[in-house]
Amino acid sequence: MIRYSPVFGETRLNRVDGGLQVTTGNEKLQVQAGLVDAGMEDEDTWPRHIRDGVLRIQTEQRGALIGFNAIRRVTRDDPDHSVAYGVDWRWARPNLIIRGEAVRAYGLDAPQQGFYCDAFYRPVGSTSTRFVARLEGYGPAGKKLEKTVATIGIRQVLSPNFTVSANYATGTNGGAAKRVIGWSLQLMTLIYLS
Image 1 (cartoon, rainbow, N blue to C red):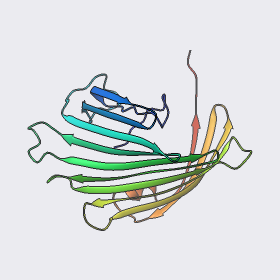
Image 2 (cartoon, one colour):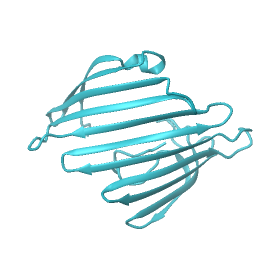
Image 3 (cartoon, rainbow, N blue to C red):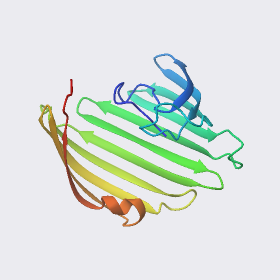
C-alpha cells in the first residue's frame, strides 16, 4: 500500500496511481485522499478504472515517519467492498535506516495479511557500501503467516554507472517465496541517453 516515487524520494507523500488526489498538511501531519485506479501498470498512460478510494495519514514523531493507509473498492462491481488497512514506518539516522509496513485486507475474495521490515546500514566513512536485511511474511488474514522470508545482503557501488548486489534468502519454500530462496547476484547499470 505504501507507494513512493524515486523521483521525489521516499519520505514525501506521492502515490503512483492515477486519478483525483488531494494532499494537505503541515510539517508534522500530512493527509492524502483520492479516487484512483490502483491497478495501473507502468505502461499505462492514464487511469482506466477509477474505482478505489485511498486515504493516507502521515506524521513525523521523534525522528520517525509513521503512516496509516486505507484503500477500498468503492464501486458496485465489488459487492463485498474489499478494503485494506496498513501502517508503515521509517526511522533514519546518518548511517542507518529501518523501515517497514504491515497490511491486512478484508473481503470475501482476498482476506490476506502481510508485513516487511528492512534495515540498511552504511559503514561510517563509506559512501559506496551498504548492508541490508529484510524480514517479510504473508498469508490468510487472522491465521499464522504461511510464507516468510529472511534476506541479508550487501550492495556495492562500483562506479557512478555500476552497482552490484549479493543476497542470501531463507524461509518457507512455497508460493512466490520459492523464487527468492538461496543466493542471488545482481549487476545494475545506468546508461544516460541524450
